[in-house]
Image (cartoon, rainbow, N blue to C red; front, top):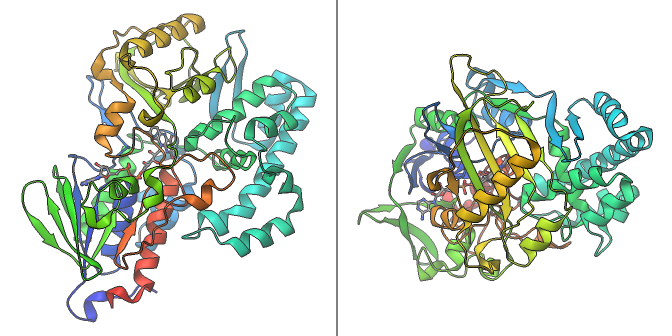
Length: 501
Ligand SMILES: Cc1cc2nc3c(=O)[nH]c(=O)nc-3n(C[C@H](O)[C@H](O)[C@H](O)COP(=O)(O)OP(=O)(O)OC[C@H]3O[C@@H](n4cnc5c(N)ncnc54)[C@H](O)[C@@H]3O)c2cc1C
């Protein structure tokens, strides 16, 4: 049961640095539990990577678009005495995504397992259908086995993981060292297009199928459990949480960067802003990338926090377009993937530090759900994977390369966007690094490559008893639901650590 801090005496003050989803969730939960919370955010909006770009047709989503694991958000709203459906208009998608290849193959991955089986059989044949069911069942077992000891634990619970594996010996092959996702998918599907399709899920956590462990196949199960669209895009989720937090007294200070977190007598006790003000606090929740602490951006006192992340390999970055365009003919749905003919060539190019010249394109057609008939244009987001700055091995500006490969892809697939792509429409890895300091443009924290990656992520608890880390750069990992879970886990740790009593 939630402890009412206010009855103990003076309410304890918590400084939350960053209003990304992890910071917002922490603030809401802590305020609900009776703490006095201030959120400091350098930009002027809630959501962090959940961003939009202004356009004449309204805000274009240029951050996350695929909302999965709804139960995580339902749980959060319930914990603060609310019903999520009173605050957000959510709609479950029958088509998880529409997939296109240049030979004319078009394939809808459907949310219902039986319907999906029928569709796989129709497009790729009976053998592929059976392989899909086998793949589905294996990845479901993996997800079930690791959900509690990894995703719902503040650090991977090794004994529980081992016991889960013993109870589910069928997942053992996916744990073999050097068994990559690419190899695993080759063992599961004889159809190369399905290998390519499911390999793409490793990019959801910033990895390449060529180097991510086979276990990463479970990432797709987050989608298999349902994909939801939100009226107004995922920004509506951030705004709804911000409002609930404000209702519970959270103070948001936007437009100012925290430049130092002060430590005194082995505890943090003050945050300094770039406007020269300082704010005393009893604890800090840091929602920026932990690498910002490790590289000394928030003061040399904190360089030891998450220090292994300083030199760890980084996850993928991306070039992200956001624009409006006159309605085009193509039969798009909300989520669309246009696959490269050169399977995996983009990952080889990224590995070499280059912007891929033959990329797979993800296109979100955010108005396809219920197009507003009065709208002359639709809004689109396009994501092209890219290496993080730390791996970058070419000096050419991203804009010209991205524009030419994107237009080439439009031509190959007959996509008639009527848009003149401008620099303001593109967010590059360098832009991401400027927006999210010390990330090297990586969108998902440390690289998920290698069997031990899960164990090597920074955890919410740090060596400073009243400093906690939350967000996609922290265990259990990247993505909006995972960053939400990280915040809930951190708040639990904070409340059970004796530090605030
Ligand atoms: C293009 C793109 C597409 C994506 N697609 C999906 C998707 O479809 N589904 C999905 O689930 N996930 C997706 N993700 C990943 C998801 O967006 C992130 O994992 C998640 O939003 C990260 O949240 P966070 O809590 O780590 O905070 P962040 O979003 O990283 O925000 C951190 C905040 O802290 C602030 N901050 C940092 N340092 C300071 C400081 N010193 N002072 C003040 N403020 C500071 C920053 O300004 C920022 O607002 C996508 C990400 C991107 C970029």
